[in-house]
Image (cartoon, rainbow, N blue to C red):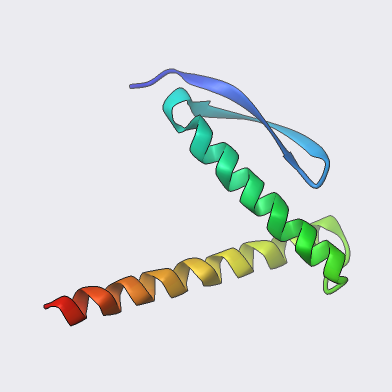
Length: 81
């Protein structure tokens, strides 16, 4: 098992220190950057006010995107059969 290290990420100008396996550090940073981008877009749009509401809206948007990709992947797999 890979050794875990502390990684610092920034979301909406706030630092978070997370423990992460060393070999997953880049993926964590990429995910944090994507989350930060989505949250900034929501904050800028004015559709949600307050960090908690922005975070929940971002989480729902990202979960929706994930489900769309999963659905498309399933459709693609089925069309190949």
